[in-house]
Length: 146
Image 1: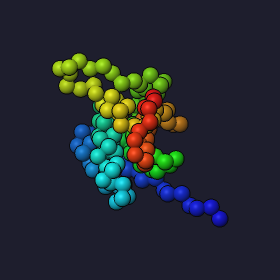
Image 2: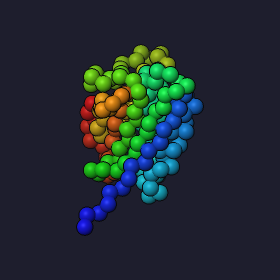
Image 3: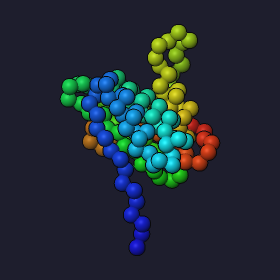
């Protein structure tokens, strides 16, 4: 009989800036105790950046839209998917920017790219897009890809 796989953790947050710290904290606390010290800060930062982008660029109506966050282990990584109802980047063109030295924003995907071993934008079957990023469970990171 095969082992039953772990069920992914799933949360839905209102598309409101107040959801960003809640998502960050929730993701970090959902990691197994043995991994929190090693992966907690990086996973929390990924959650923060991806939820911020989903709220800022993917949500259409902050009163009605939700941002979905899924966390699961697979293939030697912990994966985080943040989904929104928008279509931004669904064509695969979402790329890290080159913000100026004085820019107050625009570094989120640069952080994602440096933290994650792999990340991609995935069109959802019915509506919206997901950004999926994985951090290896082993020490060290591989090259990031988009």
